[in-house]
Image (tube, rainbow over the protein chains, first blue to last red):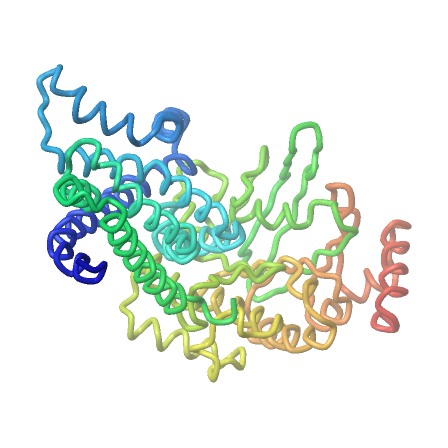
Length: 218
Length: 252
């Protein structure tokens, strides 16, 4: 069987894995945004207690490997009576992990919004939450896009670690196929190509997004 | 008796060991323009930000008409919405168009419906001569245009008083005129203004009162012709002399 024929036969199976990979990535990035923004706001605007809690979260998650975190969720939690399916464990693990990184990207973006603009907002009589909503957040989303694109690409690739806890993503599918047909080299070349195509699509999309939301003149 | 809009009484402000304001008192009548001059680093800008509490003073009292701004019970956001402020670096919202920059305060703070807010903004933008730029973003405008947008932003709130913090200091010389012309127009239309500036020509043209500040105190205060032509204090004379040298024949 030539490489192309082989690729064609294993593609459907690999694509079901790719769907899981994409699902995991989308859910994780969304969880990361929803959790990461409040953590970033807490680190910039929170009182001492909130700052400490948020910083603690960021440092612990960033200071430990994703794989260790996934193992704790999937193999560790059952010992305290919490059983998670591989997919759910992967989803939660990657979401929390991404939140810590995204919180830092968001924090950087928040802090690069010019202070003068906030002073102007206060001088108009805005409260802090109004200034954050109308001045800081809209600019933060634009400023964060470049580093955020990296995060999305990392996340897509690091979702391969979910293979280690048996989530049926693309690496698991590849391993399964290779263990049956022993054509490991070809199978993982196809897997690599699928990752590559997904990454290229994502960077193109984000590039368009960055241009679409660019502030004229800046 | 003219109505007093702003009354500042014995204001003190320190940053750590550095005392920036040491007992500043003055008042501004309705429709009048007070120009504050003095060497840099003498607390002029700090004084302005004390007035709208962006920098809360350590001691002293400030009133806007009958309301004491320095009273902790006072709703400071309400006060700020009726005191306009124009900054040296314009401080426009870079992600918003000219129209949205001017309109945001009306919608968010004053809760004015969008179409009515738009009409108010168009009127103010017409006044500063920028009605053809409503869809432009700040970074697409010259410094002079940006400063006029920020004046329109302050005006749109229908303030009782506008504070100008060195509004022309960051501008190229050929752009200063367009901003000063707008400010002169405002002063002549009866807006109450407190202006920190080194533009002696402007001060001479529209100021009702000049305050010379140095090292955190008011050294001398008076009508422009008296202060410019017969300054009592040697420091005032020296400062005016330096400014004249620097800005050429502007102060005759």
